[in-house]
Length: 94
Image (cartoon, one colour):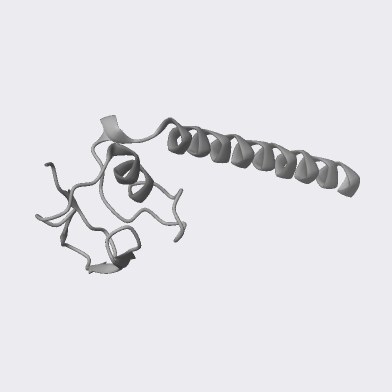
């Protein structure tokens, strides 16, 4: 089974609360795990809310990619709003 580099310390609730430390390989040699669990730990869609293992690009879930796209869009909208407010405030000064 392929193993993945652990990015930060965590307890694996699906492996008797086994502790994985930053730099360890996941899963350990005696543990079988499924692709969904790998994707969960390799994204922010887990109980910690942070990416716990490093995934190759092809395993990143569509949900993670969509979340990143939504965040970029939200930031772009906030930037546009801030620019419009700044322009409006600038017009009042003249």
